[in-house]
Structures are given as C-alpha cells and as structure tokens.
Image (cartoon, rainbow, N blue to C red; front, side, top):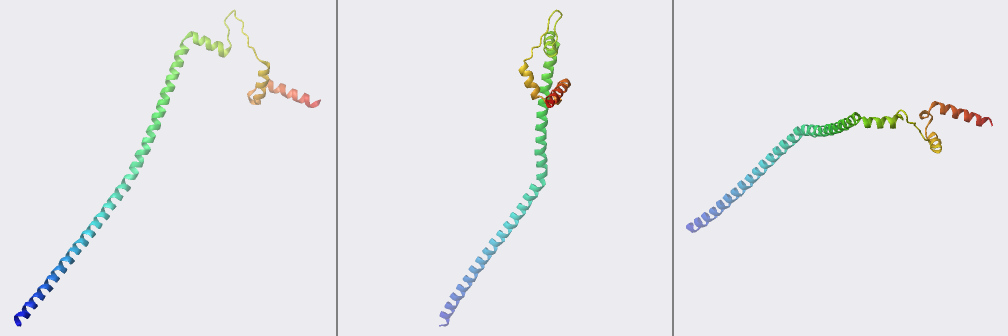
Length: 158
C-alpha cells in the first residue's frame, strides 16, 4: 500500500506541479502581453506627441508659405495688368505719331477746320433741354445757371 500511496502521491504531486507550471506559463504570457500592450501604448503616445509637435512646428511656416504664394499671385496679376497698360499706351503713342490720326482727333475733339472750310455744330434743341435738366448745377456752364435763376425769379413774381 505504501507503494500505491507513493504512486498516487507522486501522480497527485505531478499533477499539482503540472498545474502550477501551467498557471505560471499562463501568468507569464499574460504579463508579457500586458508589457507589450503598455509598451505599444507608450510608443503610440510618443508617436502622437512627436506628430503633434511637428504639426505645431510646421503650422506657421506653412501658413507663411501659403500667404506668400497668394502675394506672389497678386503681384503677377498686377505685373500683367501693367504690361497690358504699357502695350496700350505704346499703341496709342504710335497712332499719335501718324499725322492722319492726329488730324482726325484734332478735328473731332477740338472742332478745328482746315483753312477755307466752314465748321458747323448742330444741336438738337430737345436734346439740349434734356441735357440741361439732367445735369446738376455744378456740371452746367455758369451762364446757364444765372439765366435759370433769372427765369425762376421772373416766374415767381407773376
């Protein structure tokens, strides 16, 4: 019986030892997983911190870059407009160098006539009255304002 008890005892002992070893392995694997999780969490936090720092560090230079690109675009537009204006003025200058164009403009704008010609300016009376009514006192000739004042005072006496 002693041999049987020993066998039973030894089997029980073996099972107990096997259970303890298994429990220790499970505990160690859980500890390792927790260690990995905590390490990954720490790494993730560090990575997030680095990324946030980089975003904050790069925000101002990127904003300046975008702002300067906008200014460059505005200056390019102004330069193109200035070049177009210079080209128009060169064309106008070249036209004024032509004697026929200059004579045409002088006749049209200043109502000049050549020697021996008679100049006429035809005014539509209805258009003149309408123009006088449309223009304010500041845009009309001074004598028209005086004459209108005389007309108004004469009309109020009657």
